[in-house]
Amino acid sequence: MTVSIPYSLVPGSKAKAEEVNANFIALKNGLETLDNSKVNKDFSNLTTTEITAVKEAIGVTYKNIGEIVYSTIPLVDNGLHLLDGALIRSGVYADFINYIKNVYESESAPNIFCSEEAWQTSVNTYNECGKFVYDSENETVRLPKIDGLLEGTTNLNMLGNLIQAGLPPITHTHTRGSMNISGSVEGFKCTTDMATHANGALKLQRTSNGGIYDSASGKTVATLTFKASDNWTGSTSNNSEVSSVYGNSSTVQPQTVKCFVYIVIANNTKTEIQSNIDNIATDLNGKADTDGTNMAQSVKKFDSEWVGETYDIASSVTLNSSTNNYNLSSYLPDDDYCYEIIGSVYGNTGSTSGDYVDIRVSSSVIDNTYRVASARTRSSSSVNWSGTFVLVIGTDRTISLGNSSSYNASVSSFKIFAYRRVGTNK
Image 1 (cartoon, rainbow, N blue to C red):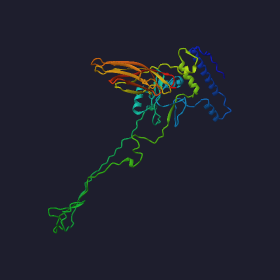
Image 2 (spheres, one colour):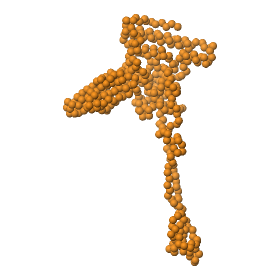
Image 3 (cartoon, rainbow, N blue to C red):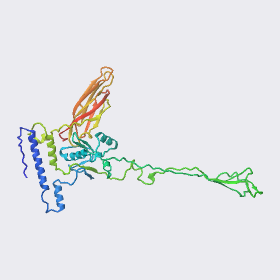
Image 4 (cartoon, rainbow, N blue to C red):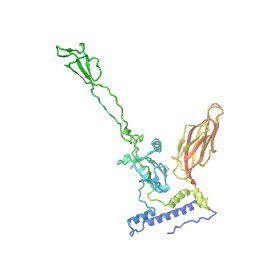
């Protein structure tokens, strides 16, 4: 099969974005046509095993979108993604986004969705959340974050629900009843005064006659009494003495083996070259003319479109010759690209005359010489300060906020308004 490329790019001259896009789209369509023609070939002369092998070789899978895949080794598969809470966008994964969109809009399983705030609260509290977050405005889906056991259910309304660890209460009721036992025995003959033997379970209780044998009545005038004790002591047992299972964990914990949990986000695994073409086409879309003399490097460094999503990094923070680091993994996509962000920070100085602040932001790509705000107090009252910035965030997804002054800088708000992908980390 021959793929026809509609435009020829001349080295040393500018290439129009629409022509570059058209070339890549033609190449992409040609590859997809080639794949389709392979799938539709007559395999009547092959065994079932051979047909399966051929389909796997050309990238045809049998997974459905939303399926869960367990693995004890990392899987390199463009159709799979760890259930790590990442934000999935359209483009390559448009089918997945549309599938989730249909579920969301049809309300066929409304309980599998929650707000971004509820998702973050669950992850911060329990380190996992079984819900999806669908953003109709930006066409994104935040995946669940699963870091524990999965439990089956037949109840649609229970899908994605987080069941907290717990044990039923252990109660014990013990009734001692009446333990006082008393009685007497008369009619025995004693030859001595037993009054001095007053200890023990059985004792002689003498009367005013002193316990002497009375010949007239033919018996002693003493009474032998006995009484059981109504007091006892005891201790609770230690469950660890019964079974070594007790005490191994602070919560309920069955024996498990850790593995990766993936979700299927594409039911036809694309080859590496197809995925790269998809990414390049997305980057090139809507861009201005560029010099085509070294297309490989130019394509690599194209920027994607801005995504407008507000994110509050921190508030009510005090900096004094110090730097705070914040991780943006829950905000930026989980991939190997660097991202450019637009943000702002504002606050106030101390209220003593001469107090000043020197506010800087930085990342693993941009060092802390990037000053965004400064202010000095000239009287006995605080002074407001503010600044905006555009900063490139590295693959470690860390942003730093620092104050080079030895005076207190009270930070009221530190937030991001939008981001976009810029090149790669290489």
